[in-house]
Image (cartoon, rainbow, N blue to C red):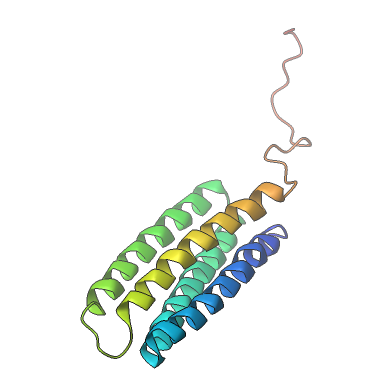
Length: 141
């Protein structure tokens, strides 16, 4: 894990948690306990999916950019497939409010992604290593 990864996680997870708690409260008032459980489960899904994928990609980034991109693509595919399975599986449930579940996931994904981009853009990380030695072009001007 690289040092610049932790602020990105905090910058995305904390706002998503705050927005998710607000949604849990709102859906609790709108739908009662089914809204509370549906929204709470949606928040847990978003936080778990994105935290796990952050960890996998962060760990893979230490092994090189090609490994990192493979890990990022792989975790993205797994998240989309699992989310689709969850949404289809719980569509007809009576255990919790499915609408609260789905809306919390949607808003959570948008919130996490937006704040992750914001945290990344605020970092001062060089994308080119100025100390790397490479071929010198001494004869060219």
